[in-house]
Image (cartoon, rainbow, N blue to C red):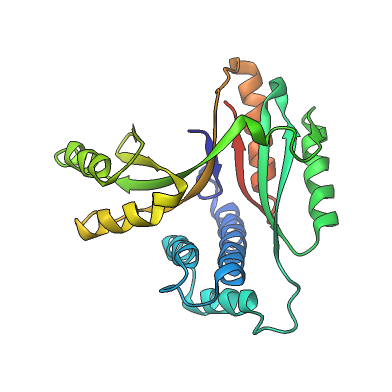
Length: 238
């Protein structure tokens, strides 16, 4: 699975860490806002909002910030511009297909910022629908495991209905059908297995290879895109 999350980053000096922390708060707040806008402000009735709040708590976002993001989504904050979710598509270094999920209150500004970064990397924006057929949407659940219980956790995930599992060090990535994500996550929680994060991603149907030099250029592009507040998630067909 190839998804680049804004939660993964490079170690920086404190000043840069503080800037990244603010950047992550902005991204997660918009995730919460979009979820509340789509399904209401009650996380007990809105699974997507519950996942967004879990992500906010995972990055230690203050409760006041979370509550404000929810109210923005439900329209209780009248002086705030509406947030929209948009997926942009681009061709990156090595002709890699890139999907960028953004949350923005100004699509023209966001598109301009993304196009500037993409074109400076030697890539280009492409029309909507150019690359989405190269991906499928799947549910993902990430669980930190211990060596003595890792295999048991994997078996419980499979029994719960997972379609695939991959170990990434101590983290187990559990893939599900999108419609089964909620049920499987709750099934694991009932068995005492807590998720680090969960959500829907775009996974490539036919992953491509990339040479080492081009990969370095692409990693630089990812870092520049990740610095943009409006960019939520980046997916590719590597």
